[in-house]
Structures are given as C-alpha cells and as structure tokens.
Length: 177
Image (cartoon, rainbow, N blue to C red; front, side):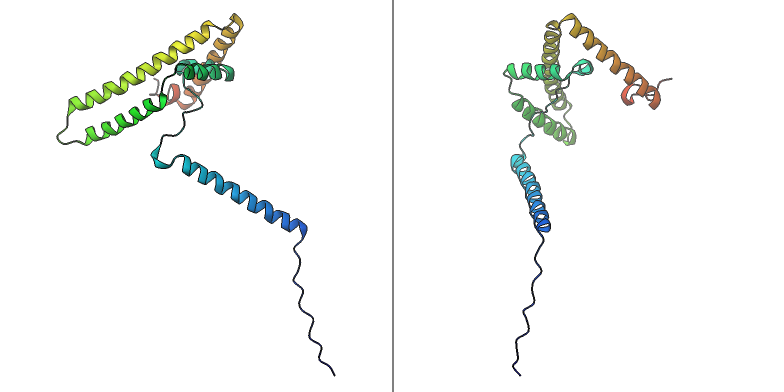
C-alpha cells in the first residue's frame, strides 16, 4: 500500500458580500479617524475656534430668516473688523478677571478696569450689530418688514406660552406672581 498524503485542508473563501462589508467598515473607520485627527490639528495650540456661523442679534433675531442672517453675516464681514483679535482680547480679559478675583490683596480698581474694557467691547459689538440690523430693515420692502414683524410676534407668543408653562417667566427668569 502506498501512503497518499491526506488532502490539504481548504481554507474557506470569504464571500464577496463579506469582503465588501469589511472594506466598507475599514473606510468608515478611516473617515472617523481622519475627522478626529483633522479637528485635533485644527485646534492644536489653544487657538480659538472659528467664528460662529450664527450671529446673535438680540431681540431682532426672532424676526430674521435664513436670508437675513446671511446678509447680516456678509455685512459684518464687510466691516473689515478683526473679530479674531477681539476674541483674543476678550479671552485675555477673562483670564485677567479670574486673576484679579483671586489676587491677595484684592485690587478693586484693577477689577473695575477689566470690567470696563469688557463692557466697552461688548457695547461696541452691540452698537455695530444694531446699526447693521437697522440698515438691513431700512432696505426691506413693506412686505418683508411685515413678515419680519410677524416672525417676531410669533416668537414672542411662543416665548410667553413657554414662560407660563415653566412658571418661571421669560426664558427661566424669576417667577411671576
């Protein structure tokens, strides 16, 4: 008798479907790693995040639609102001504020100076925003102004209704009697 070697065990072949699932999974994992790595690199070094896409316009905001917001963002950009340096100054003042609050001996005048700088910067931004909103409203047609007023009124009614439900006044304010 001749000994024939046993047949080599066959390795099971991966189905085409399983292969595509693995490729898809690998692709998705690499995409997630890329997004996380990109975000980490972008904000490395403690740099400030990019400016917000939505600019708050206080009581006017409720009346602004998507096109209004876009026009106002463009108007802000057209002012040529360096908002990044303003945000850096704001961050520096917040750090100085914390240091002043912790300082021993406490220097009330230093704290007041920091508060005045922060208030002046905030007031300057508010005045610019108000001027841009009012200029934008001036350029509206009567129909656009009516729609703007309707959106503000609708928002106010919704806020009043929500405030009554919470029994906390407007947006979490003190309780009403």
